[in-house]
Length: 97
Image (cartoon, rainbow, N blue to C red; front, side, top):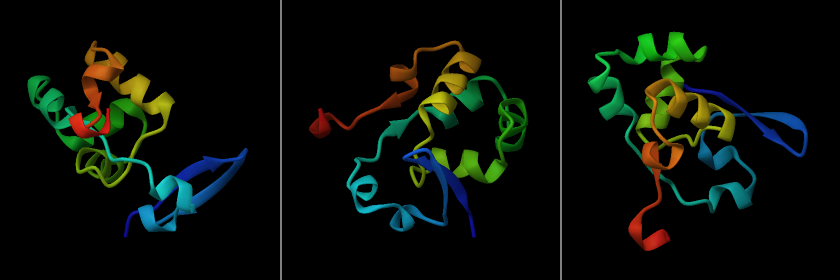
């Protein structure tokens, strides 16, 4: 089971899945991302990327598969690591714009 820490109103809450988040977070649209593509371009495993970003391999898997949306800070760190724009790494579905 994966657990994630999320900041909400200045307090850390632990969630095991999207359904554990407060209702207004569940309604957020899931974004597409190109993390797996960028990992392949840089010849990195999930574990290697996780180590470079200071997070777990499970977090990388959850983000890649759309089960977890990273914090703004983590999204920015990932984009900076891959030397691309955040909006190029994470994209809204066309019908969500």
